[in-house]
Amino acid sequence: MKLHIFQSAKGDCLLLEAKDGTRILCDGGMAASMRTHVRDELAKLREAGKKIDYVYISHIDQDHISGALQLLEDELEWRLFDFHTEQGTPIREPKVPRPPEIGGIWHNAFRDQIGKNVGEIEDMLAAAAPTLLASAVPKIVELGEELQQIAVSIPEAIKVSRYASAELLNIPTNQLPGSHEKPKLLMVRDGQTAFDVGSMQLTIVGPTSDELKLLQKGWNNFLRDAKGKEQIKKLRAEIKRKIEAFGSETFDLRDWNGIEDYKGVTTPNIASLMFMVEEDSKRLLLTGDSQQDIIIKGLELTGFLDAGHLHLDVLKTQHHASEHNFNPAFCRKVSADNYVFCGNGSNGNPELSVIQMIYDSRLGPKAKRALAPEADGRKFKFWFSTTSDMQAEESLQRENFSKVEKLVDKLIEKSNGQLTAVFNDDVSITLKI
Image (cartoon, rainbow, N blue to C red; front, side, top):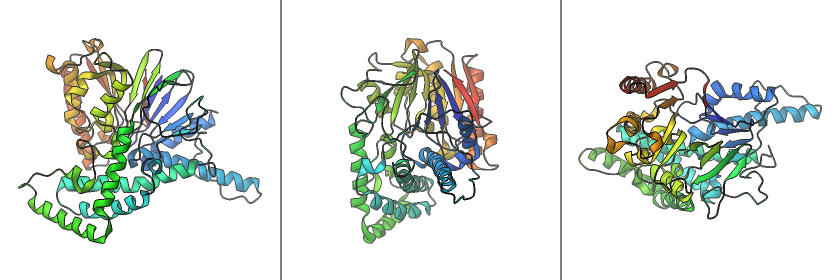
């Protein structure tokens, strides 16, 4: 297997390639990074007569889905050009490169997960986010950014489903290879088995029905607690009170206003679609933005943690290595030869504390060390999707990522050759598994 790690701004965008040439695009990153860095590279596949067999979208957050949507919009533009050319009513040829053929999409559509309340949720998020963003308190602004991102992502997720439909691009959604069943939500199910994708075997390790129910419950709570102008007024008053009291009282922003998340992780994130990918005894775990407890539960349900620990060839670190999605217990149970970090310093990700935590699980005190015997004394490598120099000058992202680079340099020196690292200063870097 090969894993091509693209420049994807604050998001994830990876191209997984099997030994037989089967390809899976794992998330699409931000639309801007797709336009700037990724789509020219993917267009080369079409020029070479190659395709993307599947596009896998882990969840609806904008930094995962908007780049995939851009790819579908590019293809739709080319299909319109083809149609008019065939009809003898030619229009201007698209200025964007034509994407490769896409064989299918794996994506748990937001409307299928939530139901008829999608529009109301979108409206309420759009109303609440600006008020939070107007705060001078960093943590409240961060929450506002998260809500705003989800508000934008919902219509993008709906567009992905619409563009893939039979009426437009006719790209099968959630149709697993070899299956003739009616497509349905992809999740861990009783009695499930791994399925072949070319020379690779994939096993769904998350979400379970529990996470999808929690997702639905959280959004319904949001509607119940924020519905109507009077509720928005109350929300503004509550925000004002919280800001004034900030520092003199403790409150949990993330469980506030009825949005039920899980230990600091938003409900869309814990519903991330996750896969264990295997080929020739090599293993890659794709985690989306899920949370450590959810990942461990999925690995236990699917038998990958029967020994109480798991050593992988590659771990795609969850949620850009946010401190809300990692803890020492996870790092002890799940170790890898290669750790892939997607993120450009936005929201402080990858977090320095997480990088240190992973390092400690390999070369720290015995009480923090990874449990898998294979990890003991074994060399390991960090792969980063970008560099500080790729970020705008004097930006917070550049400042944050510079700290990442300095910490990694320090850890490499301290490791006596056990740790190495690769930073992506081009369009992509390739990890050969």
